[in-house]
Length: 129
Image (cartoon, rainbow, N blue to C red):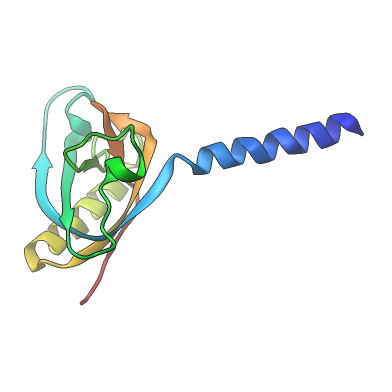
């Protein structure tokens, strides 16, 4: 019985640690888009976006997760390491649309997965207004 309780406690603690590696940036806009081709996965995951403030709730990825770089770039892992290439391409296409139309976004930041030190994202919401 003690082993079961102890296992549950450690399981809950492990889940809490995993959740601590994820945050969401609100009130953001896409400021730049970086595309990189070449061999290997050391080219920033193949595609990245840079965020900028679009409102009072904006916090940089670094402010939310201190292990992310200070320049506000996030990778979608278009190289296929952390997401399928198809999923990453859809994220990139929606980021390009948000950039072209100057729309606000909400984006997930995951510092447990990185390319060249840049935090990963597999979630993007583009807002109409």
